[in-house]
Structure formats: structure tokens, C-alpha cells
Image 1 (cartoon, rainbow, N blue to C red):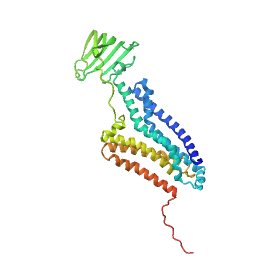
Image 2 (cartoon, rainbow, N blue to C red):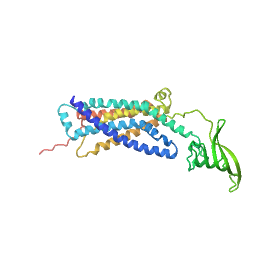
Image 3 (cartoon, rainbow, N blue to C red):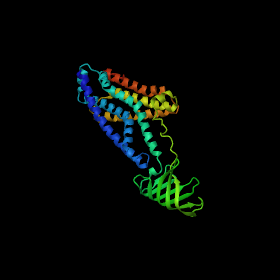
Image 4 (spheres, one colour):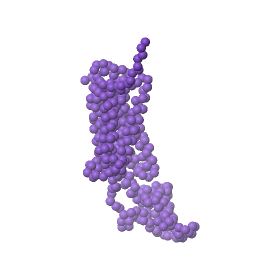
Length: 367
């Protein structure tokens, strides 16, 4: 049918262009954020692309929802602006007749959003947590770059190595500053150092160096100097089991459903709410799409951005309410998403049947 095919074709072009622009913006912002995390030492610099990929996958439901909303509103607004709507209305088509072709175009996108938020969102978060956890659990010497001061995992030691070998097990001009739990400071320097496993402990064996020990924290300037030919320092912990703790966002949807808990209910309400948000935005786009030549072309765009920001913030706020026990999960679904659905349906009915509020007329006076 010409009506359905022409509408779906134009929405597909608008959706593709909007998705490309939004993905470019999101990837750029996430890349800057990931580079910042790598600079702080939270992410392995060699795994920046992998972390960025997982993060983009987690943001896809929001990007697809906004791109779909923009495609519906921009397409219908263009038809109003070019007077195509007048032709369709004159041929017996009301605004509600646009729902079948719109949802026929949108249902694969809505299904993709549902699968992404239910399956891909926790999987991507779990992979990101594993990458960051594995990088945080690396040994102290693995954190060191030649010619740079670097803190240990506990923050009590500062390492410096002038040069190291290719395999990273030996270095020269080693400097170590250690602050004990009692506040005592120790500074150790050596000409060379090498990594060696003694049993299940990772040791740093220093050769031809000296050590400066503070006698007591309150004794400022009083130190004890000792020289050594060989000195060993434990720099690694006993290897533990691989894997990191699973955060709330990384838990599977089935686990959230089968383990009742306020925090799980809050996360589940957010995931289900994201799918309902995409559905409500599609219906809202049909209801509010109109063009007023006096208002300019930016009126609908401003409304789209405002509605998306408000709805998304209410969704995050509702997650906190459910997790805190202020409201229950069904009440949030009916209160937030149900009210938006009813608002969109009433607005669509008003536009379709032309409902108008009764206004009092002015009294007529006799001539």
C-alpha cells in the first residue's frame, strides 16, 4: 500500500540518519570518558577499545529509543509542513490511521531495545566489571612503567624503576617509598632488582642498595641508615580466585526476578521501564507531531528533548524509590508508564476526533 510504504521508507531514512549522528556523539563522549579512566589507572590502556565497545552496547537502548522518537516526530512534522497531511486527511485518513504503519516499522526496533536492555545490558556491564577488576588486581610491578613514579594497589608504596628488561622481571636504579600502618616511613634504593617467586609469594630481590628507616612517626628527622648486598621485599599477594564481584547492573534479569530484593526490584523496574519508554515515545511521537509555521522548525525538536530528559530522569528516580522501598514495582509501572500511556492516548484521541474544550461565548447585544 502506497500510504504505508511511503511512510515507512521516510521513517527508515530519518531513523538511520538520527542513529548515525547519535552514535557518533555517544561514542565520542564515551571515548573521552574511557581515556580519562585509563589515565587514572582504572582501565588498562591496552583494553580501551574493548571497554568502549562494551560501554556502547550498554548505551544502545537509550540511543535507539531517542532515534526512533526523532524519526517518528520529524517525519510526521515534515508531512504537516509540506501540506501532505492535508491530502491524507482529505482522503479519509485520520491521525490514528498512522499508528499501523508506524508500529509496523517500529516493532523490530522495539524488540531489539527489549532484548538489549534485558540481555545485552547486564552482559556488557559484567564484561566491563571483569576487565576493570582484573586490571585492579594486577601485581605491583605490573603497574610500573620505566621512568615514572607509580603507587601500589594499597597506596602505601611508591615505586620507581629507571630501566627494565623486555620481560619486565629485572630493572636498574630501583626506588621504593613505603609508609607502614603505624605511620613509619621507609625509603629503599638499590642499583638493580629482579622479580622472583619464593613459594607462593612474589618477591622483589634488590642488590647493592641502602635503606632509610624513620625511627618513630613523632621523631622528625631521625632516621636509621643501613646498607645491604641483597634484600627481599614482598610485592605480590597470594594468587586468589579469578573473577570479581557482580554489581547490580551486571546481574542477569533472571537473577533479579528469582531473588526478591528491593535493590533487585529497582534495577528490574529500570530495565522493564526502558522497554516501555520506547513504546510510549513511539505513541507520543504520533500524538504530538504537528507543525505550526509560526512556531518555526525547532518547536518539536525542543519538545522532544525536553520530554526525553524528563521521562528518563523520572525513570532513574523511580528506580531509586523502588530500591529504597518508598514505592513498589507495580505502583511505579502504573504510576509512571501508565500515566504517560494514557496521556498519549488521550492526546491522540483529541487530535483524531478534534475534541475541543467548551468555551463560554460572548453575549450578543441587540442592535
